[in-house]
Length: 122
Image 1 (cartoon, rainbow, N blue to C red):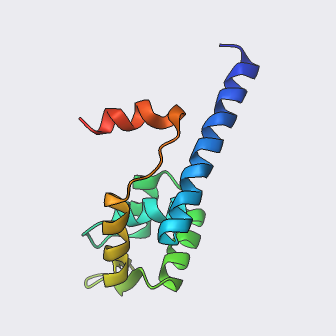
Image 2: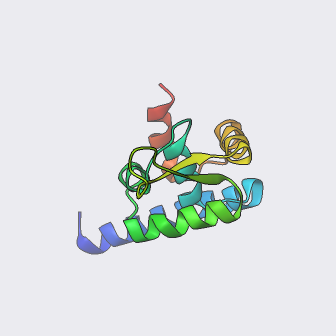
């Protein structure tokens, strides 16, 4: 694939993801990164580094996403029991509700992304 073609395909991918993020914002009030963090936490109590690993976000960006989710009352922080320096994150009731709604929402998947989504429906 030519380099310029590769960049053009990436541009289309970014546009498709941007459309998905717009749907998330309008339907659930969260960004794509916030939704990914909610999924990364799920029913667990995890550290920010676990969220970074599961989402692929850099630690500094994960910190901003977590702070935003805290402001929206979707995430709560808890001190570690054995190591008081360690901070653990879990979903609040509103975070669990938001994640549950995202999981069943009928997103309009851009055609470019449909093959990827079909892979996960099996």
